[in-house]
Structures are given as structure tokens and as C-alpha cells.
Length: 322
Image (cartoon, one colour):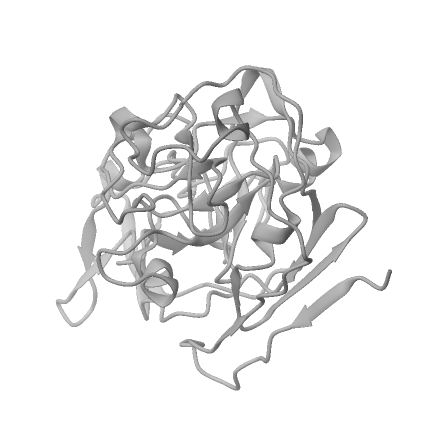
């Protein structure tokens, strides 16, 4: 069978690339649920507070049909073949970024207002090309997410875990601003809960509202906004009834098994929250991640702009201002 392929049109020039193209190809089958056993029988409750958060081992299910209903942004190429989703992107989000960000001074691992300066947005194009299994399998135990990419988003950008370069400082809890030469406030994180590394890799640390507003209706259910490296989908913070999902509804990885628009019979998925603590992003993988894939997505060590190890930093060192 020839793999289904989609190439989204690229918007010319500028930072705001808001054109979205919907991939809605159904393959004549009902998407099977995965996660806990409660999701494989009759449809689960649509209330997030009653949905299962169990994390035991389970047989995998093919999630291809559900992911084909996702809306992928301009600059993203998605191919489905051999039970995998192949994601290709330049890493530039299809929404507006800030003209300036608070960037860490040379050698600073976790910046603050006293150790950062306002600078022009350093975001540059990346070369993302990954293949992720669409038959994810729960692991017998969770695996902590590491620094660097833990998932890829429909906007074309990547998702990081909640933490900065020290692995403990929560990005959303430590957002700050500095003054630029005009006396204006310039922030570390933008309104999309994202920012670039000093080397130019744009990413999110929490719920990116400028992504969810492109695919969700006000007070409606959340739709797929990304795929984690273990193959489970990533959603915003609304359940299938449009009710807000709270941290207490989720497991230790920010995951839950419940119905979604793409998986009405229920699916295990991760939820990004608009919080200022470690529940803002995925803290651990509930599923099995291919070791080579996980290693390829880790952020290389950096020592800051001009810091230890030169522009790219010493390999293995912690990245500043993640």
C-alpha cells in the first residue's frame, strides 16, 4: 500500500505562519484504545475526573486513524507507513514569536533578571526528521524525560519537559523579564509558553495556547497538538466535554486514559497544563521509547553564548536557558 503522505504548504517570509492544513484521512476502521484495560471496553466516561489514570503494562493498539485526524501546521510533512508516523519539520512554529527574548548571559545555566539580557529572537531553522511508532506500549515502569526534545508538536516546534538546564528549575515558575534599550519589558517565556534556546531551538515548556486556539473551539474539547516520543498523543487541558483537566486528574507523567475527539473509545494521552509548577509538561514517559530515538532528541551540551566549550558548548554539559 502506498503510504499516505501530506506536505503542508509553507508560508512565505515573516515569523507568523498561521496557515494550517488538516490531515483527515480515515482508513475505514475504528481507532482502538490503549492505556488501561478500562479503555478497551465500552467508551469511558467523558469526565476527566472519572477517567482512568492507571499505568500498568498493556497491549499496544494502532493509533494511526486518530493521528490522521490531526491538523498539522505549515512547514510540517507527515507520512504514515510501516506503523509509524514520520515527522519532518524545520522547527519554526506557525505562530508569532516575540521579537526579543531574555537570553542568559555567557555561562549561565539557569538565568534570572540579574543574569540575562534582552536580545533579538535567536530562533533558527532546525532539521527534524523522526519516525515514531503508532502502536505505543505501556512500560512496566515510567522513564523520566530528559533535557531536550520529548515530543513534536503540530505547529512544527518541539516540546521540552518542565525544567530548565539544571533539571529542577521549572521554566513557567521562573519566568522573568528584563528591560531592553528602550525600557520595554522583555520576557524569558512568551505567551505561547515557549522560547528559543540561546542556540536558536524554539520549544514549549507548557500548554501553548497559541497552538490550541488554532484547533480548538472556546470551551470545547482539546484536539491532538502533538506526539510524544513514546507514541502517545499530546493534548491541551480540556476533556471531551470541554471541561478543564486539572493536575489531580493526571498520573505522575501528566497522562490519563479518557475519550478524546480523535479517540472516542478512549486513549492514553498526555495533557499539557497552564501551571507554574512541574505539572506544566510531561515529566516522564509512560510508554516505551526507542533508545536510539530518545538519544537522538537529547539536547547537546552548551555552555552559553561564548561560554565553556565554545559556541556549541562542551558535549555532555548542561544547556543554559533551556
